[in-house]
Length: 324
Image 1 (cartoon, one colour):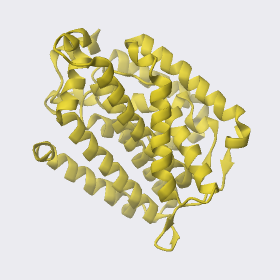
Image 2 (tube, helix red, strand yellow):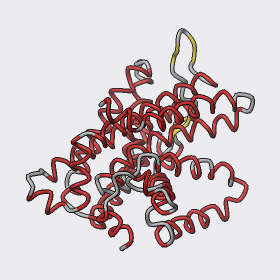
Image 3 (tube, one colour):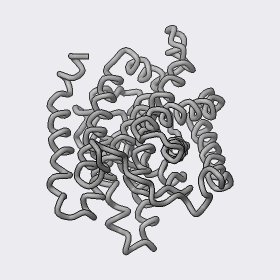
Image 4 (tube, one colour):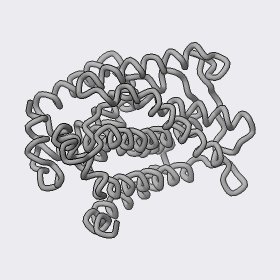
């Protein structure tokens, strides 16, 4: 653990300084501070997606659905009288377990087939959000979600942004510890060649299952915080477009790298807000970015523009897969 933190210590310190400085620097403009808070939430999500897509070789398009289950569960528990801080771990664990249960059949599939199956599961989850009106209020969504209590008052404004900064830093520390542990190295072996990994004695399905559970926890914790931070949840808040955006951030920043997820998040998370006046071309821009990543930057910014040293764990096998 100490070696992992020492290896990435400088990067973690720089990221923590930037994460805590962001809310303070933007404190004078609540709109931009909100965009910064959303970006910090996306760091939590992209850290989980980076573990699954970058290190385990899975591309779960049901990622947003798991976040949504956690968000709705947290809101429901708060409505039932639980405090947010009690509802948070219950909702996150529940959503992660549901995600693993739903995704268990898909984990036996590979590559495109896993992604396609996860897309079907995401569609089912979204339809459940729409049709279980008694729990989710359907398409109307749930508004005016109360902020968490914090030292006798509501947690909001700069205080909430600083909590999100702590959450983002914690997510990156967790990602570093996971990928530098033997578990992370086994995931890389499974990603590179699952048949060879199985011949070497690695239980491939068990490793993927464990990675999916941990990655789902990242999604679920982010979803639980999203609800009170935005104050509103609806089925569209957690549809497949969110999963694609989170995947795009990881792929754009650099798959299989620690800091690629952060780079992609910083560049792409604010875009929906900055382009809200250009909503007619927003989806076109995202489509062009996806094509650009696939064709021009298969390794992402860190992997494709001179960041191979930062990539660290990348092997020739992964680079061959990305180039294919």
